[in-house]
Image 1: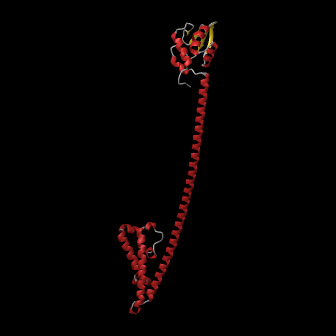
Image 2: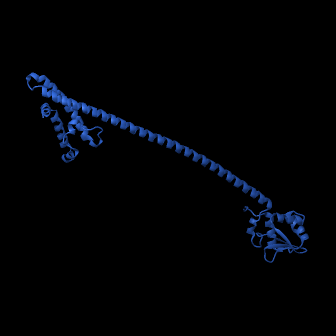
Image 3: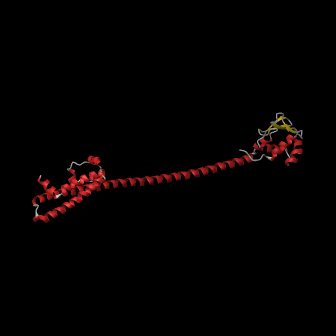
Length: 278
């Protein structure tokens, strides 16, 4: 703890000692203390003139206030020492602080420490509250994230349900198509191919046309994304010897033409009748 200026009382005393003008006031031989040889002369020539003090006792109290120690060598010689009051080292006087000022500085230091502590507590409290807010935000984010995960799981389950429904529906259609195909075969067997049954055969051809359109859509879906199909192949392609390996060898266009020919051949009226009879 250090003050900005050295005490004027000590500066004046230091200058008087350095001047060596007064024989009754001088430095000790080692320069680490000063000696007073004549109290009366000190009071009359120095204290009253420079300090406006009348007694040596007041001078001693003043020195005590700055932490000087007093010792007596002989009856009329007083010696005063202070670790910062040294001959030729006036700059050290700034380190000598009076007890009153020391108390003030200590009080200010304590106040400063208290203020720092209060600031620290306030900042710590603010950081704690901020941390709690962040933790709450993190919890809310985690809750929302879990809700999103749950929603995604629900959506996935719903998609699976829809896929199963589509698959079931497509299988049903496939069964009905196969049943219709079998009935068509029976009808073609029973109807003679002559002018008398021309209209019946025209109806059969229109039915075959519907089957052709149906199988063309199936083939397009099969070729577009065979790995992502939700439903099995139509019955009229399941029994054929055509596979994806053959498609990879032929290329998409040739494979498409092969499938189309296979399915179209099945639904030609003549082929229907021939297959049924075989």
